[in-house]
Image (cartoon, rainbow, N blue to C red; front, side, top):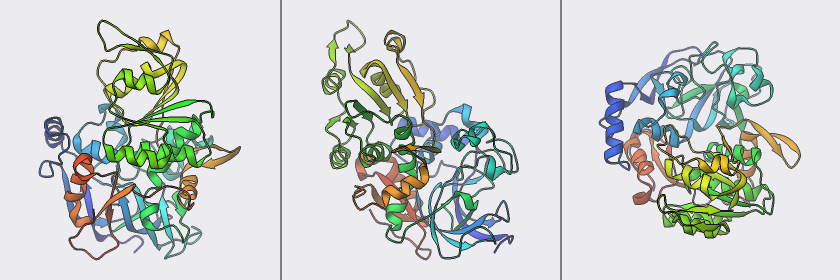
Length: 417
């Protein structure tokens, strides 16, 4: 197979400005609906050509649908990120796969199950490591638009490095993480979302006396909560959810307080702050949480984050966001807050030892004590991608958390909710 341009069935995104703008209009009118006839997305036979002969060829088993995939189809990604993608691309970067063919010296053998760290930093681009890559921060690579590959930090948004929503893909051997036999595919497909949640936890680990707000109870918020508990945090966690079923999952994951779309006064009471009435603007809070993890990335979540923090508290933007609209940032200077972002995954320190975030995610998921039940809510075959994306778009109706495409069965219709 190596080097042969064999056809494979793949879900491919074809960039089109008119369709992109139509998708933005559709998402504004009906944000929970997948306009599949407008989306520049097609299930088609495409040639398979690995970018490099040293890459390992993989047969896809499961591929999760990420929030970034949904944002692309909703056309709400930041215009500033356009240089960091190349089209047409096969979607999917939350990949569980089986090694189909491994070149000599790769360290892998056919039949092994793996998950794929989808980053494409200097090492994948055949470049000397930049400053960030030398420090193990490959998520902050300075060469995502240079080298032997087309622009793009991730597989799944890249015209050469295929994604997991296809029968086969290829990846550098150093990007593969072996799966223990006791870890089923349905749990392993959660590795990418857990790694994304682990990185801000490793970078901003709270003390046991802290109050922590996790704003947003989708898959990243749920994983962030579970990561805190799995790594031994006894901090008091206040979880903000939109839907009751998300609140139930948050309680199962270890949240002390769960709030469903709270008012500012209710959020203030939960974090131990005093509510200060204002004539306009909804009121202010005095005191509050030490840490605020924003897993939504909206104007409202940013506004509540800067208000709900005590002096010198830390706001961490975990959810992807572009323009957030007008936000009152007076608390930023008045209370000397720290605002920072968290992008993808790299490495960190856990219990005094250096760890690679993706490998730690697999390690935690393999623990019998890790509460992963209820996180993967839907699986659909690749041919049924329209239903899969609709389930992912409309969380309220489908009670969806993580939706995945299942490529283990022969081609045909089906679905499991």
